[in-house]
Length: 223
Image 1 (cartoon, rainbow, N blue to C red):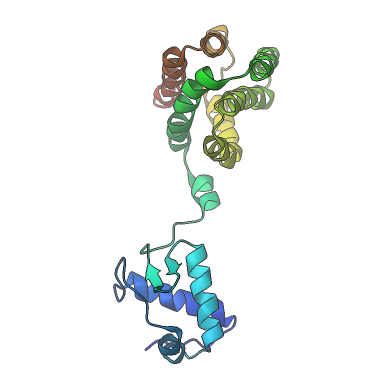
Image 2 (image 1 turned 90 degrees about the horizontal axis):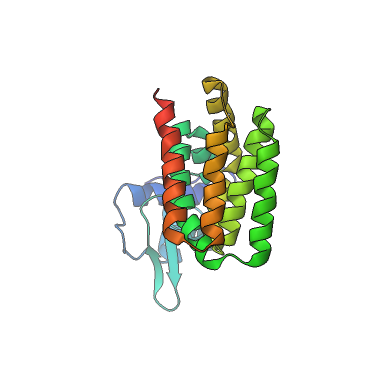
């Protein structure tokens, strides 16, 4: 039996419980023993067990059901999102953008307001005037695409977009430096066509333009 010996006790107890879940001692859907059983097994008090369970519940591993007990609802804790994004390569970042921005473009065509359309137009002009420096170009490009996601009126898509914007920015800068060229007229025309599709509420064209544009970036990676 593994005992908890080091501080902080609740953190250590949570890790011991997680290891026992990972080992299969308590399968998915299983009910954990009560605090009076777990406390002596772990060598800690009942309050420490409660805190350990609270931690694992916060990580999505356990769930407390009123009047029924504590149950296993996941077999492992997902890796921290920030670390996952930070390690992603350029292709992975672009694939994630496709997953988010294609649907966002379609929703934006359906839901955009007049004010959001004006803001998007302003972002498009800013993008056009910042095509000489890589960092300025990437920043104004991201601002335009974020405007599209805002117009989708889906807070989850916006949170996802914002959560990997730092890695996306770094990846785009790396890719453009490697290519040596960026911000040409054809590329900007694509963004103008996306704006026009959203403006006329053409969700199919908006989604298609976005998918084709981002897919072309992955194609250029292997040239």
